[in-house]
Amino acid sequence: MTNLDLIDRKILAELMRDATLPVAQIADKAGLSQTPCWKRIQKLEAAGVVTSRVALVDPDKLGFGLTVFVGIEAPDHTAEWREAFAKATVAIPEIMEVYRMAGEMDYLLRVAVPDMLAFDRLYKRLTDSVPIKNVTSHFSMERMKFTTAYPVDTLTR
Image (cartoon, rainbow, N blue to C red):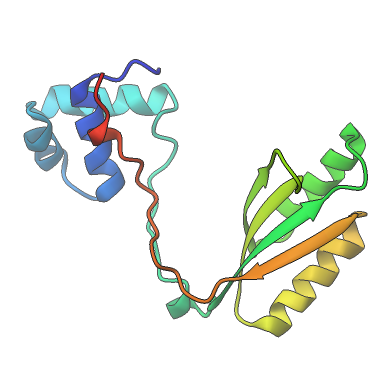
């Protein structure tokens, strides 16, 4: 479903801003009544546009004060290595995101840990579980902007 109309984009913008809003409020902001709005939300979920509704939390208040971006260079590009790497990253819950990249690094990971000691343990666990050619870690000093909401309500078609 790539052909989202303005109403769909308004609904999505509200859901991304606050998924706990009552359907009546979302409908009002989208210019619909409740039933058509709810049907559109269900359609967006069925089409896989809305994949889940979650609570966002403050990592510092949960004790995850260190964010590390880890660049991985693979020793080879075989299906077997990719599968082993995927399995290794899935098994480490502190690895929050994994992206396969184009360019100098092959993979980029976002890692959330309490401190440097915890990162060192994670590093050893990852490098012990799968061969890696090179690892480059970048430590975040400050999160200046963070959002999970895509700017769908600013798109014009």
